[in-house]
Image (cartoon, rainbow, N blue to C red; front, side, top):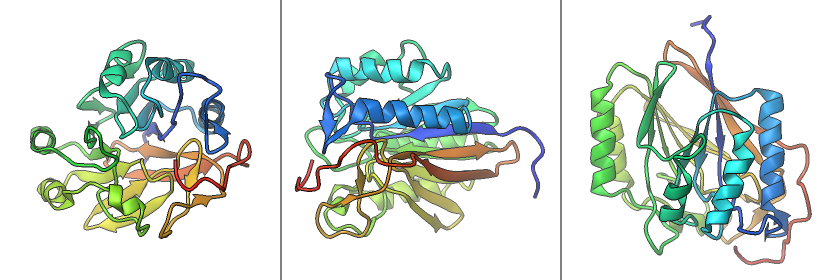
Length: 266
């Protein structure tokens, strides 16, 4: 079916790993500069109508890192919906959201679509879990808007990625999560960050999607921690009023710096 009305343009920007010091580096890459380059790329390619920042926004959980995040996104002049990741500090993230155009919300209604934002973090753990309260909220929000096409966002992957080390840090109750998803046929996609790589799969009628980091990339299908030597990027989505969408990943032309390949982890 062809679509004629203008779509809503969404940019998913994830795993920025910012530090209190804007000179901070992750595996040799300056994460602040990397984010600036990816935001610039998004603006040049297709200015977004909104951004979903899906976790690990601060590597050190510092208030200053979230202030850098705010500064990086402020020039876009669009809403930015922030999800926590395992490296984030929840209180600092909330306190530095709800200012300017950074938001920490359960969901939003925009352009005839429902976007639901989940918290999959577990205090003190790199892995993910969706608490009963999160699943109940997801169920209730979807049930309240049965006629709107929906996207569900979270930080941790709810399916295995094929990397043994990375899959130890997935959502640990995916069956309960997908039981809720399966009750609501208006869900078009489940989208996450955390894995620093692109993943696309179909489950029933739902797209399962992950997105590259704005800094270091992880090598797919690796037994142990390994870096993929491809550039940072972001995911774009075009959401149409008829409930269809298009999506893809756009990357920088080159890695903005020298990656430290000798590091056994991060």
